[in-house]
Image 1 (cartoon, rainbow, N blue to C red):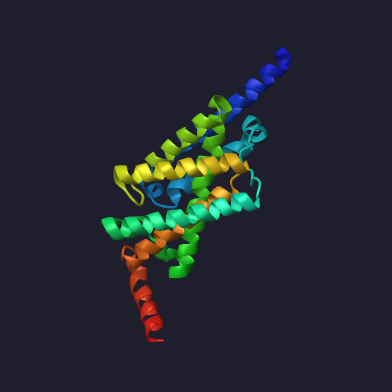
Image 2 (cartoon, helix red, strand yellow; image 1 turned 45 degrees about the vertical axis):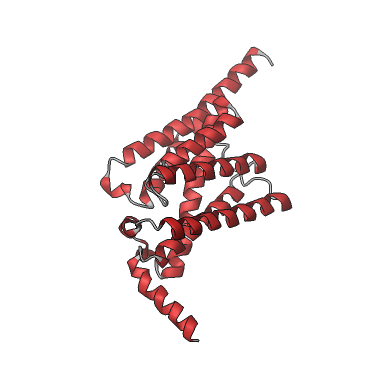
Length: 237
């Protein structure tokens, strides 16, 4: 590899790092606006601004290489389904044993604006999982990997994922720990498949389970009565 090629490779890796820096700055600025601190704006607004910067700056546009679906195989799909099953089981066990106070989630999410209980659940699971994976296993993953390699990237993005879920479900230090473990597995899946498709699907499974738990526990009051009526119809039928 000649000096010119090395310089070009270094420049490209630096631009890939700038993708992550640009997104972090966009998120920091958006969080200064109180209206953008709610879901889904907390993720959607900085991501859209980041995409605008990518479209405007040739250096960013030519080095946007993180958006890949990845390799889909029987083994990877089986692993994803197994991960979804284990995640669902862990969340249900946590809710049934710890029984955390989930009343604050209804005000934070405001999902009634997206329609009925099923429609809102689909919107939440798809949008939240997709946005978070585009950020953590997409933009940030590629930015870190461009400088420090695969192992550091999986750990670093998992830690960031955990910190980002301190106020998620489960919340607090325990929730951040669980999210970090989940992030480690999602990062490994991202490395294995070389893309975002299956990590997004696995994340959707976790978010769908969380949504069902919140509805069933009455945290989403607008849907609670409707779910109770549906359950009663099923029992009586």
